[in-house]
Amino acid sequence: MGNPKQKWTSEEEEALRAGVAKHGTGKWKDIQRDPEFNPYLVNRSNIDLKDKWRNMSCSANGQGPREKSRTVKAKTNSDAPATQVSTAQTAVAAPVLRDAAVVPNSDDSTKAVPDGKNSSQLVVLTPDKYNTVIFEALSTLKEPNGSDTSAILSFIEQRHEVPPNFRRVLSTRLRRLVAQDKIEKIQNCYKMKSDADASFGTKTPAPKQGSQPRPSQTAVHRTTSTDVVDEAAVAAAYKIAEAENRSFVAAEAVKEAERISEMAEDSESILQLAKEIFEKCSQGETVLAA
DNA sequence: TCTAGGGATACTC
DNA sequence: GAGTATCCCTAGA
Image (cartoon, rainbow, N blue to C red; front, top):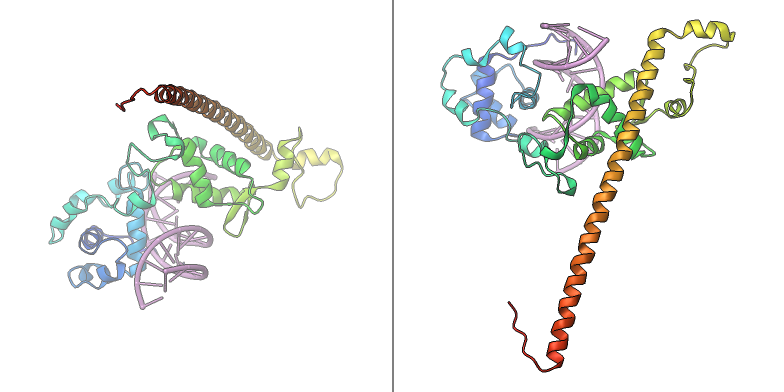
């Protein structure tokens, strides 16, 4: 951690791309050892390759905000020298191979989601709604020991069209919310703060933990305006999330009812047809199947 | 031993 | 302060 950051050069990135094209993802040690790429990657470990590829994958399809500003300033891939790896570069123009499996919605418009929905039917998730959907997920899942990142991600993906790097974004957001004391983390799982739950249901925010006993008049002054606004925002986000979730559940229930109704109608038709066939057969008629 | 995933932190805007 | 890039740690195969 104390080590200074060693930025990846264009040559290193190209070598990594070429290495992945040659060996495939997950073969970081092979790539690192490959004499074809080793001169470029001599300063990088297999872990570094994995991390860099993960990072590149996040910004592969242009959605990731990671490098879009940075590449302009510091290093652009377009001005990378045409080295021996340039041919392989075309083979792996964008590092999305592994992500296609890890992030099911990478760039597939027919993203497979539960209930047979595709992404075009989902609400596109914008950054300003990240916290809202996180609260929505946590408040809905209500796991006693908290929900892990995958569960939260899965929940959100069922309801929203998320960017391909959302898992990482989600992870960052969750950590931030924990740091802000808005949610709590138990091992690798996250859950709504128990006191937050209580405060959401009441008109007045719960007093800050660790605050000392004091006259009620000074207590007002000790709560900063930003805290009040912050808690109000969280409470509002929670309420919105709750309302959205109820709406979603209601809509799903309606769809399910309609589906069952259709199935019942189909069953009725089949039953009627079977009856007719049975009657004709009983009368000695020959029934030909279509 | 190697990889994947998550966390920590330096860096940039 | 928020987002991003890189480094580090750890569990699991």
